[in-house]
Length: 177
Image 1 (spheres, rainbow, N blue to C red):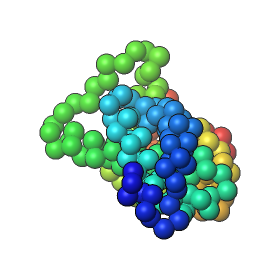
Image 2: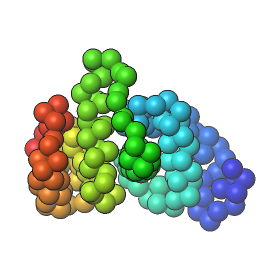
Image 3: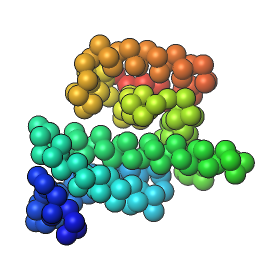
């Protein structure tokens, strides 16, 4: 962390510690919801925290820090899911879930996001996660990502058409409009 303290416009060591103490639990909850593996979730928290340190000046300009942290954590997790999906396909694995019946909808949604990860760019996959997994409205997604509602409406329409073409499971129907 001494390297981070030397960066221009960097956060101080005390600020970094406070940032971690304050936001790591929420980052972990987000990561475990997406990745459903404890070790992967902590890896994602660490990677997201590193990215936050590297983009300290962007973080400082963000009006709502949790929005920025949420976006970074989600992107890290989605990239991990994309890598996992590519690895699983290459290894010929069948990603059958061993979760409880209560976790079935979440597992179906995560597996469906893994399918979408093969077809979408990073922003599209982030929109899909916020829409399908979190059940956010298009307005909420626009606010979280800092994009216009019109852009999100177009993205959701494109993603929804792709989802139908891929055989969208009933349990992962999108959130509010």
